[in-house]
Image (cartoon, rainbow, N blue to C red; front, top):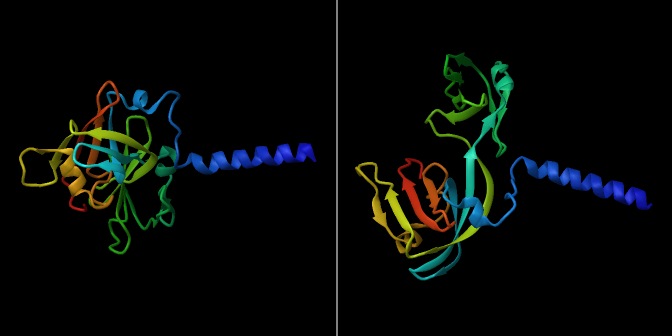
Length: 207
């Protein structure tokens, strides 16, 4: 019985790891500050863990990365096949056109989403839709403290020649839900000590 229990436990552990590997990546050893130090990330903002007025808050973010697809699978696509994204969207392939830049799907079918596979330097392909919007994969979420030194650069106005320099208090006032600050328009930057120093919000017609 003990051997069976150990074997079943090991199997459940393997299944758990396999089930989460598609969408969740653990942090490397060390704390969050050492991981984010000096780096810029594309993120989806997901609200506040806490907010202590205009000067201090704990902000919540989910780091996002471009979805990547295996080159052999993309290059073998044919009409009638399907493309499935990490969030479970499934697209039927009704037509394919290829050039030196990539593969263009469903250009002749107004009832199917048009998709573009673009080859990357590492040999994989990334995916965008007909509006040139990329498909993103969410990796992991975390909370990070922010203070009045945070620079919120708001470039959400398409007519603006440069971003407006704003504050943490402005960001808290602007944030309504994560559709306004998602991977299509939001980046955060940390200094070498791991302190959150900048939040950039770009223009996006869908936000």
